[in-house]
Length: 344
Image (cartoon, rainbow, N blue to C red; front, side):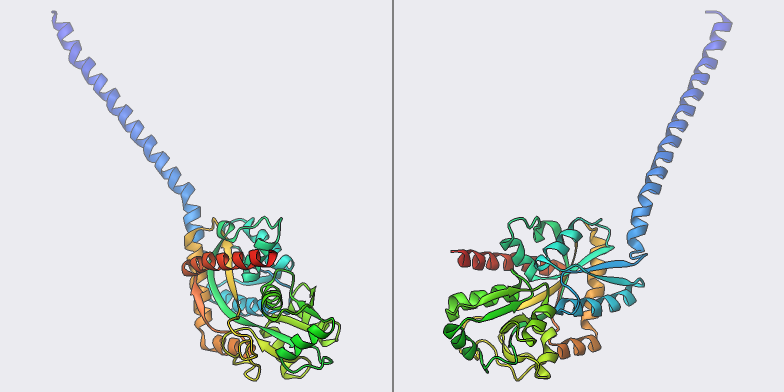
C-alpha cells in the first residue's frame, strides 16, 4: 500500500461524511418545511373557529312570521348577536311543519353560519311525511332547547261555546272545522289524537302555514276552532277577539291564568308541550356548537328575557345541547308510537 493510497482514503471518508451530513441536513430542512406548511394550512381552520363568528349568522326559522317560533327567534337572534359580536339575521322558511327549513339547514355548510330554530313539529313531520328526507338525529345537532310553550284551543267569536266540553258536544251535533299551523305540527297532531282517542268527536282539519293564518281564519269565523302554540294567541284571547277554551300543559299558563287546562276540562291523562330549539348541521365543529350553546343559554337566563317570555306565554326552561340531544331520541320514540297508533 503506497503512501498516496493511505493519504487518499481518509480524504474520501471525510468527503463521504460531509455528503451524508449535508443530506441529513437537507432532509431535516425538508421535514421542517413540510411541518410548517401543514401548520399554515391547518391554521385558518383553527383560527376561524377561534374567531367565530366573524360575519353575520343566518338563523332559519321553520315557520312564517307572526308565529310563536318567530317571536322566540327574533328575541334570541338580537341578544345572541350582541353577545357574540355579529348580527344574527332571521330568515323565515315555513312549510311542511319545519321539514323544509330543517332540510335546508342540514344541507348547509357546517361552519356555524347557518343555524335553525324549529320545534318538535319537525320531529313529528319526519314521521308522517313519506318523502321528508330528514332525520333529526342523523342530519342535525341540537345547540340548546329554549322557551317551551303550551298549545291552546281557541274558538271563533261567533261560536256559541265556553268550554272544551261545549266544543266536543257541538262537534258531535254538527260539522265543525279546526285550524292548525300545519298538518303534522304538534298542535294539529295533539288535537287530532285527542279527538280520535279521547273525545271521540269528528272535526275537519284545515291546515295553514303557521299560527298567524290559523288564528286569522278563526277570528274571521272562517274556521270554528284553532289549535296553535299559546304565545301568538295571548293578545287575541285577552282582547276578546278569540275565545280561550283550554291549554294543553299540565298547569295553567301564567300569561292566561283564566284559561283551564285540558285535564281541568274533564279529560284526564292528556297533555302536550311544544319546545323550540336551536340546531346546526350535524358535522358542525364541536367548538362552534359549544359557543352557540353558551350564548343561547346566557340569553335564556337573562332576567328581562325571562320576564318577557313569561308575559308572552312561554316557559323559561332551557336545556343544553348534549342533554337535549338525548331528550330528542326519547321523544322521537313516543311520537313514533302515537303516529303508528293513529294510522291503525
